[in-house]
Image (cartoon, rainbow, N blue to C red; front, side, top):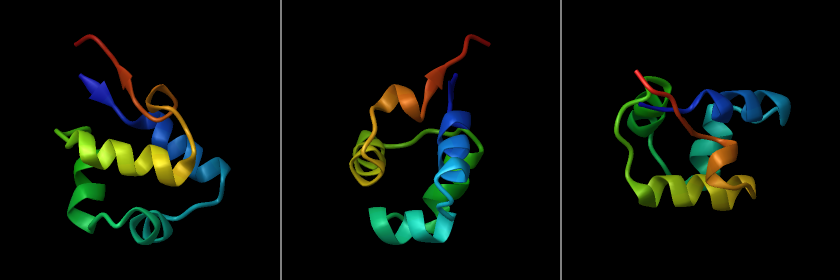
Length: 66
């Protein structure tokens, strides 16, 4: 399972709200809900997140064996 716990920790540490993230990345609230629920996300979305946050994928997501 891919988990996005690191994303939420990063946003908190950088004092970035989900609204600011949505505006910066051009993603919608439905995508934010999917990320929060660790559901499927397009690689295009992950690319946008990494570009907006100036980070690598492993800094916002991780694989956790079920």
